[in-house]
Length: 237
Image 1 (tube, rainbow, N blue to C red):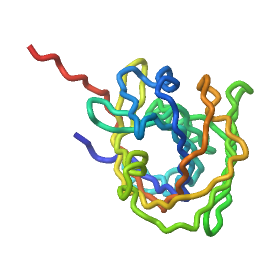
Image 2: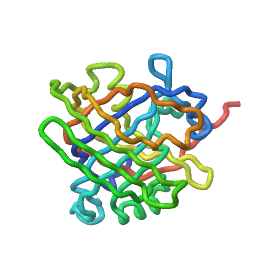
Image 3: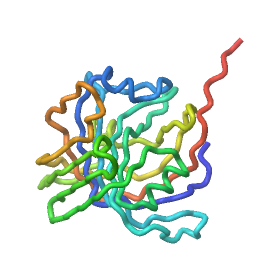
Image 4: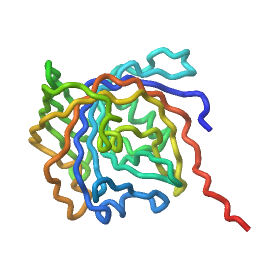
């Protein structure tokens, strides 16, 4: 059962970039306890970039405690005992405070990066360059735009599959944890994209991304609940 929320933030200028990927390429990077979900005959890997604004902590009387920052994550779609969720493969942010805080509180795979966003009426340009040793660096540079109408993600099976997720899964010292989240139905529009650089998938041997499915989204308020260890079902006698 979910307890009280511990934090919230607004996701602004959100860009979803999704690719089909064979399950066997993802399997070494996802805990065995999690089932990798498929849609239309394949697993999916997503790049999601956004501005995290109004970052609030409940114990701080709901006031903003971290200035707005940019974030980018690489994720895939999983379930555990029929509960659907998201598993993050990598997460980047341009706030060292956010990176250290998230790693300490959740063990999510955050890295510090140099990021920039330029927004315009129909879309955005987004750049991320991960800091660190050369072998650990990852670059993502894109331009996305749309003139399509906004629609609720639940209107179509694929967007519902990719976006309407209400649990985050992570591991800590070999144990699986779940973090419930809450947000309204995503309001999105189909978009076109120009990808200039993308080395975010270099850690996946043998994966060659093909044409992505791209969406831009309206501002979304998201609330986070405490991570809790996943309890496996007890065997029946």
